[in-house]
Length: 290
Image (cartoon, rainbow, N blue to C red):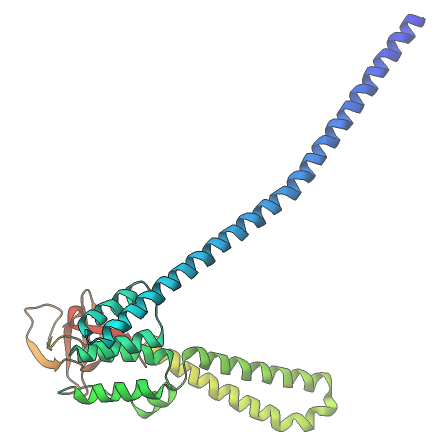
């Protein structure tokens, strides 16, 4: 009986030890899970911080290299080596770097090298970034006056709308919209203030509608209206998008034409006289509207 009881106790002890081992294993596993749950976010944050550091380092290095190349190009321009300066500016632009100063200087170099169309194209791109730059606008107007033959000119409303960048137009519209929203919310929360806020609310409504309309015009002009600037000495617009098509009209270097359509390596354009023809993409620089 004692033996049986001892055997039972031994089995019970084994069961208790097994349970204790299972509990210890579960505890160890739980600790391991907690350890992993703590370690993974730390490793993730470390990797993210390292990636961001490398990105910032690469961006800084890239910006430093671009700045050095820009200074070298400016030196070439100052020495009167305009063709070399033009090539140096173009090399920087091909890396994806764009700034008003870079495009402005590139336009100056192109003009000094005798390339009216490429100068106008560079000035127009710079104008999208700094539309109110007086010196830029003066240079653009001066080069345009050197262009021979028919060329397109922006209308008054395009010039007026173009005094703001697209980002500035969007920011103004957002500010007016939230101001209107705040006034309407205040009128609901405190009805007693409604009479005093009536004039301000009406003004906010008008400004929101007006700025929204201007933003719509800017967006349409930027993304739906393209301009082709002739960059060859003379370009022949043809009746179809192929070299054997009949000649319709000619455009000189620097002429600005409205883009109507595109087909492969050809663009359909119209001049200010209403004539329509196709030009090879090699002869023009296609730009967004002003």
